[in-house]
Image (cartoon, rainbow, N blue to C red; front, side, top):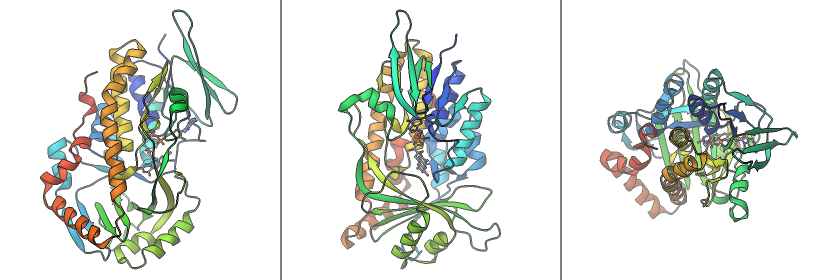
Length: 405
Ligand SMILES: Cc1cc2nc3c(=O)[nH]c(=O)nc-3n(C[C@H](O)[C@H](O)[C@H](O)COP(=O)(O)OP(=O)(O)OC[C@H]3O[C@@H](n4cnc5c(N)ncnc54)[C@H](O)[C@@H]3O)c2cc1C
């Protein structure tokens, strides 16, 4: 009988893990707390390493067909004038890492991954919030049981927890030693904007960033076929929950229009065409010493959550899915497979988590001298691709498809 992994969470990691484990001949089932495929969230940038992982899963077309490739990176001053630009960003990425970066709405990516997993025969169950885990250790066998808030339960051979930043399974794996997420002091506002197809002057479709007045602004187009954009704007602010819900949309929209009132028409065109906004508190979670316990393994944000400052959360989740399948294929004993997975992934993800935290801690500059220094550094980096890509060499150069378990 084929191995039955219970996968908890249908964010980015869950369906990706289901796909890679299904291809091993396993019979994974997904349990998600939400009522259906998430339509929440804004966009994710799938960088060369994430694209390599999708390629290894034979799902690269999901993003090449539905997302928007980033050809250039431009840093603008608040009035819209160009401070510096790396016009060859896309082609340099392809030359160095075999892939460029593709921006895509998170809901579109999730929908595509979910559909591929369903087509492969994976069952999804929604409204299933994990509330308890138990393991039985029968002689020569054993199993793990997940119990859900609605009182139902499911028993399988393994439990792969892809349940995000506030993972319930993480409390089972790490116990009381584990530390809760810590607010970093910064809030990121996200918005989706839509421009008419016949817009006379649509915004730059590539990555545009502005750093000024304590704010870090970014934007890009998220579809090659529609005039859809996502923007984000982060600054220091009192704690907000790390919720992607857009319920307070109007209030946040108004706040941004007010705070950035003196910025130029490019920013205001984006805000004026915005259809949804959310405020998302940025949290760090101290690394956990344990990644697994018995038949339970943590994957994605459940084990290495990171702030979105270098755009690697979804990319690392995709890498995890590819590497985990290699480990389970190589080691029939799940303990050995989980240990190998941790050995292969811990150092890399810890470095990315730390890099993201560092960027978050140094981004929201208000002091005039520090702002001037930041602008000079930006000019040097965007003007010198070799220096620019040194910064991204570690995350971008990884190809999960070539990792040897
Ligand atoms: C609604 C939402 C929107 C997001 N939007 C963006 C975005 O616009 N840009 C960006 O850069 N990042 C976004 N993220 C974060 C990004 O998706 C993750 O950082 C990254 O992709 C890692 O994916 P993950 O699958 O590990 O975690 P997540 O994507 O966070 O997925 C975790 C999943 O587990 C489910 N879950 C949680 N607890 C339980 C439980 N007890 N039982 C069952 N299911 C549970 C959640 O509902 C969720 O679907 C968003 C996350 C969420 C949840």
